Image (cartoon, rainbow, N blue to C red; front, side, top):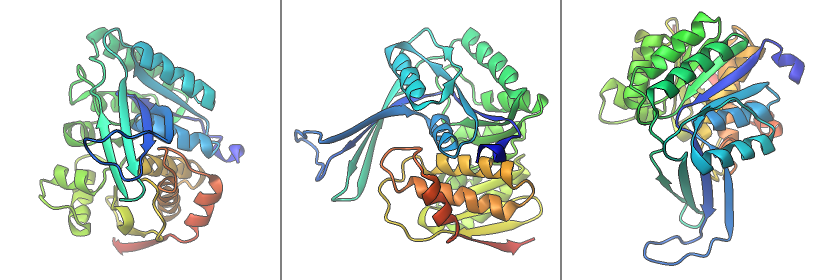
Length: 321
């Protein structure tokens, strides 16, 4: 499998990394004491979730991230335990944030409590610029994911994308709000918002497959090479300047949707290394990874067997060209 991905390493960049804690609490309720029977603690943040999926797929991958304080050190220790290479930039102030998720399997609910994370100083952001430029030199892809921490202006992703592209790497952007809108100026090869994020970008009040189609085309017009808008159980829509596709996924029993979008980005990038120029095959693999991730409570977990089985059940339909 590893020989398939011989075209270079994938670097994921997580500017607002997190230490994820996932609690499973049946019949979770407010104003009650809950004894936690099942808890998982893992390195998190969208780019780190994507790196975990790439690692599971045997794609050479490394993580660049801001880390701060004791929580940041724990995050790096856990990445090392998972066998995922890290090349961090230390932030002097604050702590890497905690992201707590409470899953209630009885009510099928997911509650998230997410801290803000550290404030990034100017010299620390400059260090990350240098790191991205260096790592991009031998990277096939650089994936930029997640929110921007305090101290990073909205144009940060656009600048980093341009630095990576100048070194010959392809780039992916998975962000929302101002970070997505400003980041498109960098001309990423791939963007992957969900339906709500795409609707927000397009200035539409309601997310639907129809608005997703319009938003995907708008994302391409704004600078993306390929825009993939995930629609949850309704699959996804993908647009390039030449065509629009609808991706249909099978019905599965979802354990947690946490990190499914990150897994989809990882799958799209991994498949691009294997199926260069075959967009339907790339879209199938991306959707299979996103669906496979929903079978697990921990973000960024897939098994190659699940991905392969799901891929056989996914359909990609050309709807306009």
